[in-house]
Length: 297
Image 1: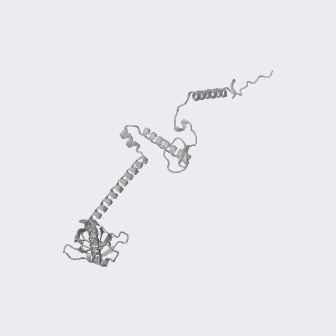
Image 2: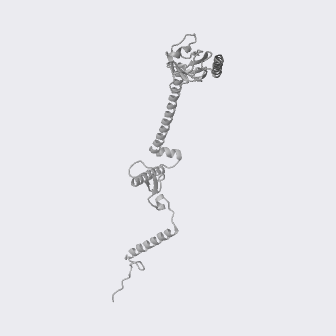
Image 3: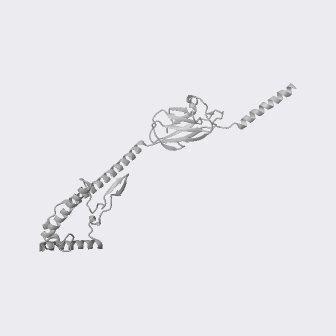
């Protein structure tokens, strides 16, 4: 019986070990930042992130640091620091302790035998390559971009100055004095006609300015031709007119039939009053209030 019990226990232990061996796996590198063959890393404070298929053991980087190695193109090992991540335990950060050379390729190796927290181990050595960026090229690109921006600002400023100069020239041309003799020679008109036209334009402009000042107060205003024909009030960023205005305020000479008849009638009445005054009386017959005086017998 004892022999049978010992044999059964031995068989059970053998099966258990074989089952554990069947379910045991190997540790693998899932991904890295940067990727294998990637370039463009800053030479200063350079670091590489390595993500494994299993969580790494909660131990200091010094204990697993011997499994990581970084070499330059000549094969010289560089000083590095291994920092496990406390949040994502599948990630290990490999930090370079010195400034790397610019535009240079480096190689990282993770030695086989690195063991995860569950006992899975990295079977073979794993390698990746990465490169640093060219700082001189970056500076050149930055300088070129700054130059392009500077040229753009100069072009924009020159255009603005040119537009302003053209605007000032046009304003000066409008305000400059007219040489009647020169205009007469160019147009063939008489000097008197040109002078009269210039004076009319000046008077019209002065009248428009006075009208604007009376309507809006002192300050730069547009001419009456450019201004709206209605005064308006601003309320909550909304504009509304104060009230209707006669069409004559806009410079129109149109008269309706009723208005024309009323004006004609008024002119006739005024003519009759003038005739009566010329005859020696201010109250002619058939006029309002014009009662004839009866002679006393």
